[in-house]
Picture 1 (cartoon, helix red, strand yellow):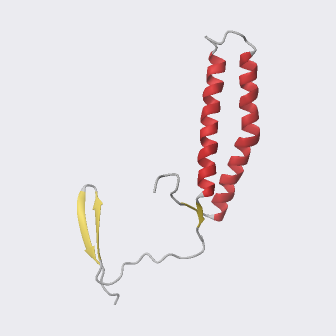
Picture 2 (picture 1 turned 90 degrees about the vertical axis):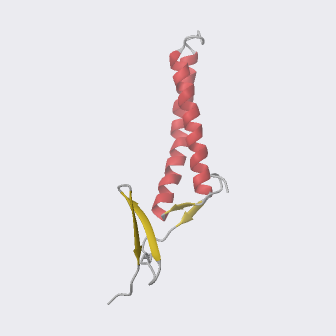
Picture 3 (picture 1 turned 45 degrees about the horizontal axis):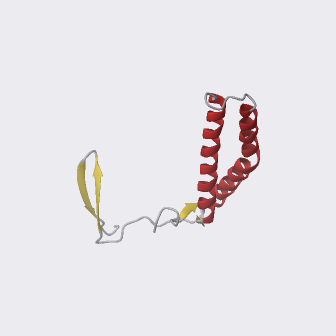
Amino acid sequence: MNNLEKPVYVSADGLKKLQAELEELRTAKRTEVAERIHAAMEFGDFTENSELEQAKNDQAFLEGRIMTLEQMIKNAQIIDENEKHERRRKRGRSATSRRSGALFRATARARR
């Protein structure tokens, strides 16, 4: 499974934010960058036109972000924020973790 197919776990509110950002980029930001490119092209000399180069770089970044958001929304998996996830270890299971470079091992015990 490559990164383009991995599920993106997000809350319903988070998905709405991603969709709103995507819509903003597709409409207002694309138009803004296109206008900047057009204005920079009116200066003429394309070989040493830093405004044109910056506008094209911004356009490339914008299109990349749009593609990323589209993929994230496509692969979105809604998580329930209200559902409590059981994170306790079952009795007899052990866990290993690293803290400050030291290795710790713990075994879950029954509650008293």
